[in-house]
Image 1 (tube, rainbow, N blue to C red):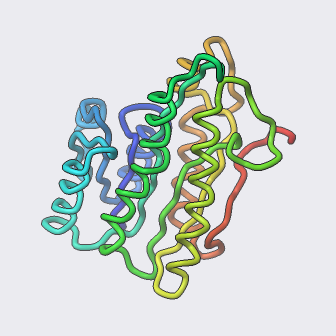
Image 2 (cartoon, rainbow, N blue to C red):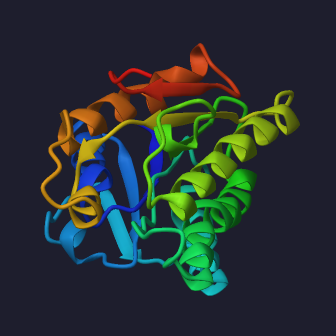
Length: 226
């Protein structure tokens, strides 16, 4: 039984991961600005409270929860994401800041808060996007989203290097298109090849076992070419 923290759990992949981890007997702390969907599941081995990872006061609540209840964290999955689909001529700097606040700065802040509770065998999994991979197919309208996900990839590599002697391990999954509410809102009518549950199953397995084989690696989780 492991202690798992997941962000972005109100819907989509994060919501499905909460169910899969708890069904397998693990303890889960589900973090999202909207905790209602997870609380509605009434899971005994799951805790959830409202948490905006861009707010320092909310990050402090996570540290306090760990101190009072767990003492140790085995897996941190930074799954939260903010996606704006706007042409570069129309996107605002507020849109850019929001993308980076959630996809980069919030991830960094939460990771920094959780690291003191993680040991050498711990695993931090950052969820990025194929759009952040150099040389991958790029989509117009995703200048803020994809560039921020590229920054997250580089951050993961840097942290893996910095903590390679003491742990935990850091890896990043660059996901292709997944049929989630966030995708539907950004690209109405687009049909992705994978469901949120299918991708959640992959991430759950990787988070529990991937650090035995990888550290500081970018895994492209996509069947598309390039």
